[in-house]
Amino acid sequence: MGREATPTPTWEELVTTALLGTDRRTLPPGAATPGKDAPAALLDAAARQTVRRRAGLLPAPAAARPDPAPHDPRPPLPAPARRRLAQLLAGRTSSPAGAGAGTGGRRGTAPDLTELLPQWLAAANRRQFQAPPALLPALLDAARARTDLRPQALAFAGPRGLWLARLNPDWRFALRGASGGGGAMPDPRDAAAVRRLWEEGLFAERVGLLAAVRAQDPVAARALLATTWQTERAEDRLMFLDSLRCGLSDADEPFLEQALSDRSRNVRATAAELLSALPGSALAARMAARASTCVSLDRSGRATGGERIVVEAPHECDADMQRDGVSPKPPAGRGERSWWLGQLVEATPLHTWPHRLGGRTPQAIVALPVADDWKEELHAAWCRAAVRQRDADWSRALLGAPSAPPATGPGTSSLAERAKLLATLPAGERAEWVAAFIAAHGLSEAFQLLGVCTVPWAEPLGRAVVDALDIARDAGSYPWSFSGVMGLAERCLDPGEASRLEILTTTPDEQEDAAPGAGGYWSEAFQRLVGTLRLRAAMLAELREG
View 1: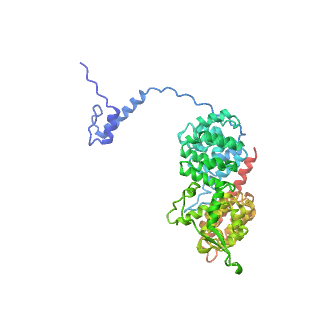
View 2: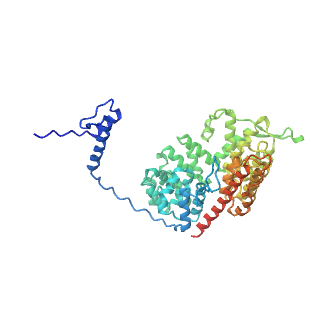
View 3: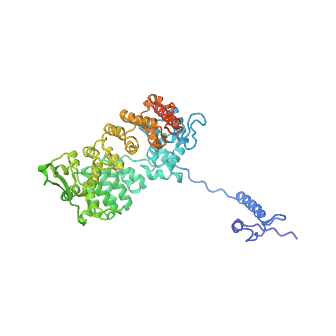
């Protein structure tokens, strides 16, 4: 008579014993090993069972092969540019080992390649190069980690990048954030194909389709949106409505007026905002009528030159105001009447005020005194209106002279609001204004303003920034408080400035009252600046080889 077979413990029994511990649960039958304690025997049994499970695994049926990647008609990158992109994606420099390593928080002298990647992508997209297939995974990983890279990275990745994103859940963001969602976009003139994708496509595909159709035929785009508007989800209606910002015109007014009655509060607010950006719209006229009853000119002191603006803020926010986008509930710490007034003035066409306030220019209106401490509220609302309506004349008036201290000038003392006003001015004028601001106030207040200036910075602006950095260096302080501006300069100065800045890379003689070692730190910072500018010049030259 043969021996009874030793029972084999199941994988589930072994896992349960391991989770509970061998001191609380005895080993399952067949797991014990003579001469070994329980934990070691459990591990032996788990190893044996692992081999059994792997050896007995049956191959699964092969999945369907994915469709081939779509064709990308753009020209390939030149070989030097392809190698540069690989370096940028890996975050490597071509300098000797350790050359860029800093100590104690110092950045060293080597360029920060990760900060140059957005600029490289923008330049490659301008020349309409296709992404190297082998680098697409690294490119998508970079875009996944950095949302600021996504628009340029996905444009560069092209149809093949979006095709690849469909095969990896980690890259699904590309399907949500890119026009077309990875599929081929139909010709906007092909009505049948457009209608089919609009009714059957993914949300990102539909957003991209609406944008493409609107670029060619705004009337057809609105008609397409109207076919499904009532059945769309509120969040989708909001996104579709937001796409009308591009190419917004008076022809969009009827559709937007209907959206003022939408069941979603966010959709209504967006529709009202878009209508208020159309100075000729009926909503703008309604807002102007309301605001005109609140803001007027007091002529009682005219004989002595004492004219002033008087304000009578609304006493209620009625249903009609709310339908036109006025939010009735103010944020914490804000009075109701001032909150309502700001919204009315913000949505009022700016051409209303010269007629209302004695035929004055925007500069003269902004210079008028405002009674009863309403100046800050009124000027802030005019600032928002100038930004919304892209009115350069009002922006100039509200910005005032760049030499005026921000706290005492017209408009707003908020540098963030000033940056928005600057963005409405032509690029050259914007750069000149910020250059004069830096010359008057230094760099400590200029960081946000620099961020809205066109890259590369125009010569007056670049010179003003470098001169201010040079002054800070001569003052003997450490450069770390200027690291943000220095980083912007690395990305935004004209690469042709590198030779002129070479003199600043030397270590200056230490002043008696200077911080210890400050000169060396400044030398490193300027070496990195010059090195980055030269690297940017090389990058652009490599892309021009194609």
